[in-house]
Image (cartoon, rainbow, N blue to C red; front, side):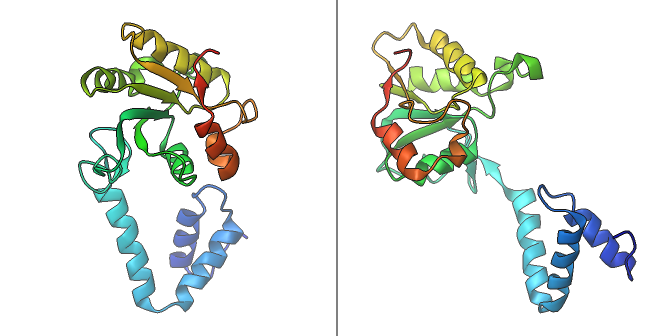
Length: 203
């Protein structure tokens, strides 16, 4: 599919095809679908995407995606404010939330330490995590990182940064998850059980 009857269609297809998992044929079908809708539908979609790009924020406490300075989780007075679950990204946070088995706070690192990819500790929200643990009366840190070399390296590095806090409990998800697996793809039952059955880190 190399030519279109309209330059406007071609431009729309080219932009939509830049999205992950969408080829030009799928993009073309989406464009045709949009053309069949009422103008208000396309306008609402366009406005929602523009607002998403321009107005989305990151929580000043946990770095979760948020609409305001503080995300809805950190602002919820019913959450257990003595426990922090450390995750790589927003998708992992969402996966854990969907289990309904965890009621503490989160901390989104924004990635994992990966020397091969030149991702170093200073590029992640690690020092912000250490400051939270020191200043907010945190009693437990849960590592909910992928069961990979990068996940283990990150957990080990953070543990070293927290070793001066002798009364802090450091745990990790029970290894009911396959080695190398991503949390976002784990089923909710398995992930929920791994949270409930978390173990002392390093055991």
